[in-house]
Image (cartoon, rainbow, N blue to C red; front, side, top):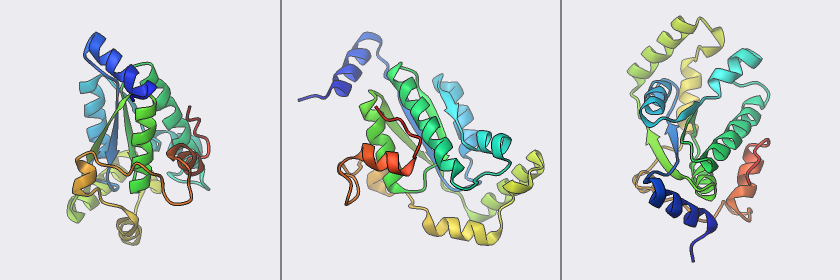
Length: 194
């Protein structure tokens, strides 16, 4: 039996032939996520949401005492509301965890949208060049990443595998969680997932 979200998606697609899409950009710093997000937002008439563009003006740092998680939760809440209003969204987040991506896919489906993952791999030389260029253009000291930071990011990044890139995600949340909504609210404390 189809869920309410699935029926809504089918009804909307039948009426106008288009369903709102949440496009998630996945990659490490310097992979080109923001450039791609801007392009996709223009091409797909979508709203682009990027925590980087809020963290620095509000707090002067890309991550400060868990504030990024709170901000991401609010941006995801906005994205889900937009999907329910049949407006597409591009999330320029990075989303390094496979569980984060699975939760966002689940939340997107519940909101009546479709989920699209865009993974941007990057080689080390290109990554360093882009990070240096971004620092030069923004003149923001907090955007400087050391080699040790880049190395640590690579260690914790769950590279999307072929199955995930083909659209296959676990239906069940991680062990100990009853559903993806509960997991997501724990991950992003300010998330208001309906």
